[in-house]
Image 1 (tube, helix red, strand yellow):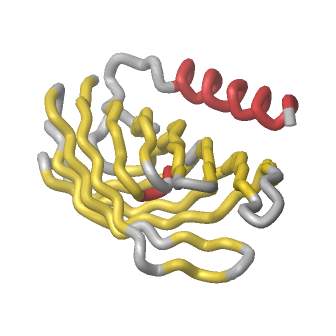
Image 2 (cartoon, helix red, strand yellow):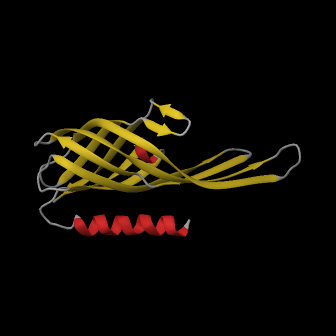
Image 3 (cartoon, one colour):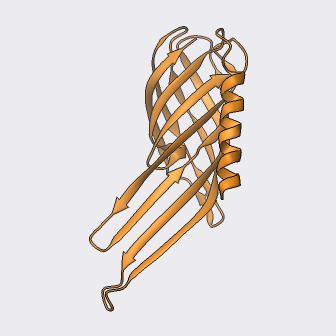
Length: 169
């Protein structure tokens, strides 16, 4: 488990150092739903100085779902390659990637009063296609994406993501 998170941290640092070139378009945004499931904060960058073309995003997200007798906490790390078509403020975005997920759950057994606990690490595939509004230089970025998820159990087609953040060079 430690080696997995060490590998993700190394990947994020490597990507971040590669993307430090001042001429490349970058964005930091918060996404609701989407590839991070409930909520995620993401760093997105282009591989070339142009607004369109191939890029990548790395994020961290999660949330806590709780009720009267159950509690589920999740941490997600969406990592996706994406491609933008459009050289102006409006672009079509398409991408694919993987989201590792750590889940920790506990629930009360009402019949015995015992607390049952479980945790585990898994991953799911994710796709996205949607609209991105992003300035040529600096300013507000908005994304609306269709984000189906692929798991070992099958294809979950009904997922959307909404993002708001800041883009800069």
